[in-house]
Image (cartoon, helix red, strand yellow):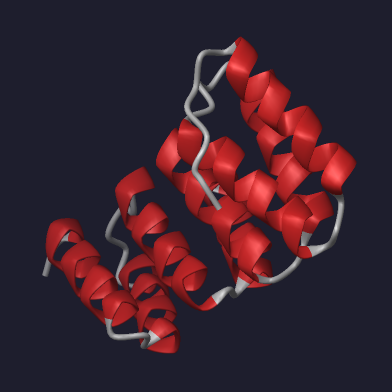
Amino acid sequence: LDVVMCGAAIVACGNASQTEKSLELLHSTIASRLRPNVVLYGSAIGACEKVGLWSSALDLLGALEDGRLMPNVISFNSAISACAKGGQWQQALKLLASMQRRSLRCSEVSFNSAISACHKCGLWSAALDLLRSMVRRRLRPDLF
């Protein structure tokens, strides 16, 4: 059993909407003393994103850092998307700001997910501010 195999199993469970199984696999991997990496955590965050488990996604992002690992753009994007699906616009905007403070390159996915979170909560002004920021960065917004 190695980290790559565990990561593949976590992704497979996430794709089958078996998020609890994904999280169990992550915790089993950690308990077995295998060294989880950013990809493994990102796979679990992605599983949470698919079903909108924003709180679990944020917990995993924090656990990633507690394990002295640096979250990447993909980890953040999945967490932002989970927040959007859960209607957590404040959390989505905090994550976007955190990416920028860390000098991570916010992508179209980062902004579009944050815009989606604002849209779901009727925050048109914030959504338009994000859209303008995308244009300044020469990023292409999704058509909703």
